[in-house]
Length: 402
Image 1 (tube, rainbow, N blue to C red):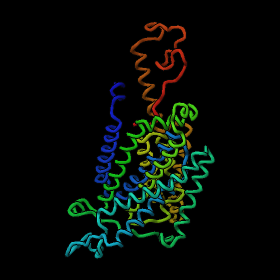
Image 2 (image 1 turned 135 degrees about the vertical axis):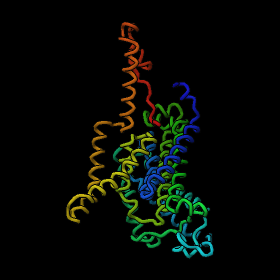
Image 3 (image 1 turned 90 degrees about the vertical axis):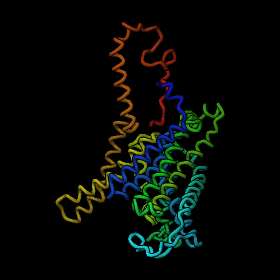
Image 4 (image 1 turned 180 degrees about the vertical axis):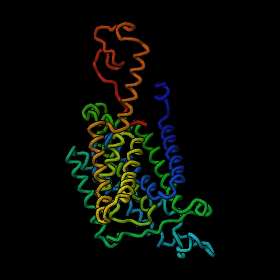
């Protein structure tokens, strides 16, 4: 069974992961029709969290400025989309349009402009990530965290001060509407979530295949021992820079899709809180686990929603309810982060995997009998696993779990 898993094509595994995410997201859009915006937020944040979990878990680099890259991609997408709209690449509403077209008497952007704008956002975020990454590959620990934190902190005030970016009121974006008859059948909001899901599925498929290929092995080798990696010919600096650029590019795509979902680009969307929430999602899901990033993002987005609904049911003054609704989600997420860090350093999926392996080990020992009776212990050999005999070395544990 293990040999069969090892022979599976990484590209095929990535394709399966992307299709599963796409199918689950489409089903959720019908199961939660009143939570389409929250579902879209999950998808956009998931894309950013997927790149961040690769950066932290595989390359060992800590970034606290992921929201800054999201803002870069968001505003680049918004500016490109509006420029294409102003250039006349539009679609007029059908004659006698009513219903969902009633408020859209003016032409809207052509559908093909969205991929172009999203690519511009990804390219802009990747370029900024490359510039910051050139300095980041020379930093470690708190220095790297501080540099990325400064970047994340300056993006919001800069976008709020520049009039061309809409200032504090944000920038309204002329996004394409859903084409008929699909738009009339499923609704504008659900269609936009589906578009975001396609982007998330592509990101998950590509990253799953990449981290299980040569690039992922190089990242893990550079993280574990730079000197040894350099001796075997791995360009450590280039590999680390590539991880930083990939993380920034995915964040840019998440920011661009967030703009598409909301139709606006606001500085408040991409503050320090967003960076911290993404970091919490990665830690809760287990750094290096792409599947864990999905669960962590779901949890991070769901906690404020559930907490707000609970606080609204509390019999208290409106002022107290407002304070509780605004601060309780942050307090709860902080508490969960502390508990998970202390109890399960590898994240919740790591604890589940260790529990599963422990249960299988006990079952195998129960079937084989006591060690030393059915299987004599030879001198110099450790019976705890096949990778430890003679050398005492622990067999490698995969960094990215599915």
